[in-house]
Length: 287
Image (cartoon, rainbow, N blue to C red):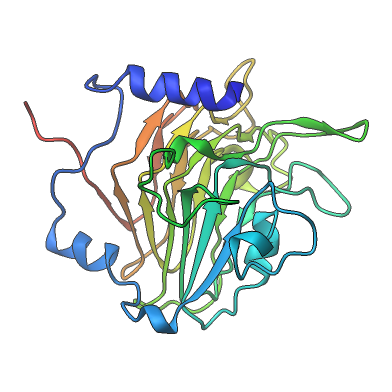
């Protein structure tokens, strides 16, 4: 609850001030085409539900049988099947790998997914599926990469809380999204670059996907790239909140009504955009 309160306080106390990158008033035709390119055939979609309060053994088919982790829902996705993953209020931490560096944990999208939306803000058990209900605040579905202790063992902060990796097939009709969640606690501080150049880039969200990526009503707050003490690694740190490098079109990232705040890096503390990929940011109109 303290994390929810902090996110809500930071977000809502600053409405109307300039440090935010929020509140779209309109989209360009290209952005509209990308943002709404997901399948319109609801009957063909697979719906998967996630609630951190769900009991073990769920299958994601209903809220009463929801998965309790994001990883379980991701593992249930059939790459070629249009899928919507509904995520209830709660704090979701990327699970560490079975062996190796616990920093190497992230909510990683499969590069072969063709049409997958991940949407937070749901009431979950025993509520319904309407994110616009009174408690449907997007800052109450939190993807948290910060360090913690699990059964006495320290778990390092995640290098990237959410990752849209490269790989798979480059196709203009591949669409993935992250919607109505808060992303926080990422620490891309691998100054030895054991993870390559990305070790000091994209603490909150790392985007290298060949797909069309949509970030909609996402709050990216308190993520770092580089060392917190000196902000200097072996290589210049980039994109504490979001790092984007997708290569050539038709790959693109569209951001709508997002809040990017309180992130840290040497270059592009909030967002760092590299190479020739296309990114469309919807910004508020001038009062």
